Image 1: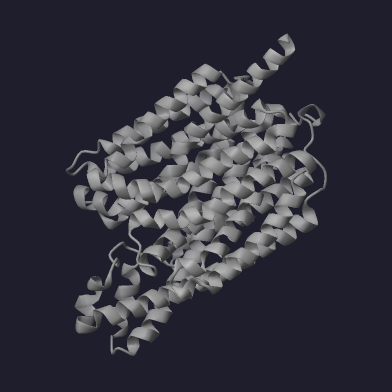
Image 2: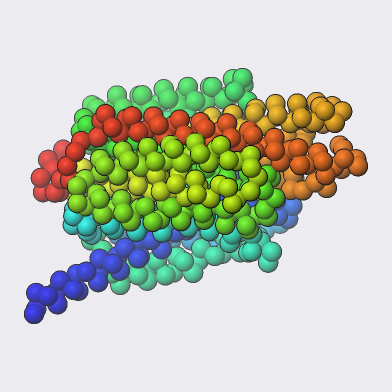
Length: 522
């Protein structure tokens, strides 16, 4: 009887820990998309420059990408629970300060600085939160727990456009203030559930920190700004090459360091390396998908910003459902089957989705959107859980930092490369089709560019260029943009096919190892 009661209490505590960590990371997932929706109002109210607008979005993402690895290592040294609480405090405080940005000359500097610090808070919090979930559940239950974690947290990404649309009707400042009550709930649940806070004291490798932060920062900066600077600009390639050089120097230094920031020899574990390779490849598709789908639904389908989120919810219907099945498969037989099958299913789903994008209606697309979501849902949580669980228990935070760094780098590559393909394809299609209306190339290029700046929301926007033919021109542009997206989505299908080959050839069979069986590498 007593044993049963203790077991029930343990089950309740584990679920409370899971809920606490979901609330903690919910803010970071929502923030990936919610700010983009409100950026026109922010720019208008604060009189931000175009560069300032870019840094309101990119500053957060850049800080997040550069500091993830450090956040994971710090969590292992100082304690996972401590770092979650510190990260929540930094994130929520900076969110409040972003919402309190004063109007005037200081506005641009103020909001960019606190967006960067907000990203730093997320980088401290997220690896620790993920490590807590991994550590709180026994190996045979992790798949199910992580499926819930990634299913709910991932689904919250699509809430951003919906919430952003409604909150912006009141005030753009509310998109930042919404994080405050979520943070309070996360703190309360964390304090009640008291997840483990075991510390593994070690000197902080500051040289390694400078190298990886500089390397990730420069590499991601070059990739993010490639659409603005252009691929033929020396600044683009200079940033990427310098970043890669610093990352190579980081690896070489870490191999010789006594107390490395990251134990890079963990990649000698074949399963860990393959998991991370798969995570990198699918992130080329997964994160950029939010941007491409949102803009496509607004331009080609004519949805408003709020309903664009509903378009993404179709994807997450498949994603969340499949994540639960994938988690159970992981617990029963290991990650190989759900990851291999998921990559193949998503590749087929993206290809069929691409084929029907030019139908310009959701009715013909939704089965394939769900199919793509099912595929990604089978892969993401399972590859992530498998990778972290193959690290020693004392390094869960570090392993999580590595997986999230890999995912961020993949997302940056995807946004840069697929974004460039979309822009060039869209410009080419629009120049050809609008040429039949007698519209000059320069005006056609202006219309193409407006689709990515938030000013291309309806046929009336083209009146200055097209006069009485505005409606016909806009309908042509809707189809042109769909055709450009079709090329991008076929590329996504090809990327997932590559992930399928990597997983098929590289992932080992069998269930996750027990932590006690994992050899300590430190």
